[in-house]
Image 1 (tube, rainbow, N blue to C red):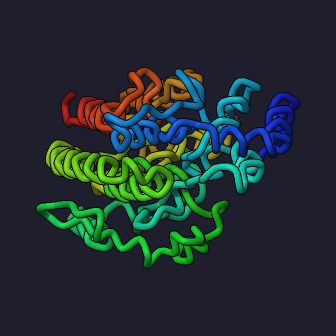
Image 2: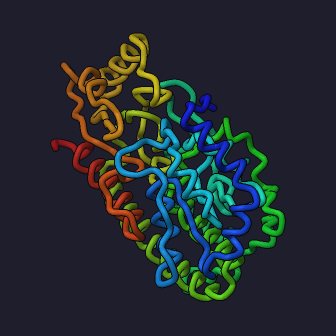
Image 3: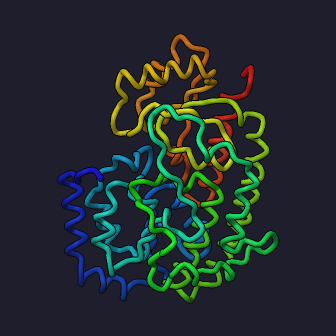
Length: 354
């Protein structure tokens, strides 16, 4: 975990000192809880569940990266009012763990990497990956994820989501005793995981706001069906390019690769906050040449010159992938639009002869 800046420490202290005032705000608040999501994809899932009841607030705005986000005092004020806070996990929002500690007993905090039904993957080692266990499996093998958390093919009945099996009374998540630091935090880039997150968000909101529980469950079922259809569409559209090797800017896409059997072979940088050294660049250029890498993907949150350096003088093309949807309008459509944009960028850049 990175050390906090002075501003972050001030914001964290504000939360720690909120105490009685925060508790009073919670009891005096309208019946719909204030919901804060850290990043746009998670905000979209929450917005889908809350449709017609309320609108969640978004913490990390615009093109900011959650990896190096500096928490502002205004963010602390927003979090002071929160009844539910949704975040991915410490591997993504490095600024959040101390904030979560400060909110203990004052707001429900949901780390989506720990949500029942979410399947975390270990962080991959090195900037050049050898063929890995996760990314080349049959996509059909992922269908069981939904059966495990109660998504039947017809009704998507979230009442049967088996939440009791996951310890919701104490939110201990006994099945998720993994070390967060060893797990890849970009869990939202698997639509299967997103479906599990939607169910968890609906469950927690139904507990926090029983008056609207039925609406949350109905919204979650509808959104789940939308994600299931999206998953099928993505599977079909990526099939023609799934064996084409590519390199990403940072290793944010393992879940997406795993879900659709894609052939990612490396990342430009291990840590998006630190540029790669000359040795890594040499390794990656060698992989591009020897491995027939078709495309190297940049990200809008980071300097694209590194990608240009890698592809210059090679046959590899370049394009942009955005794991958080910086340019998307916040709301329930943002998650499907995010996944669709990833598919479009990949198919355009990886298609043979493109």
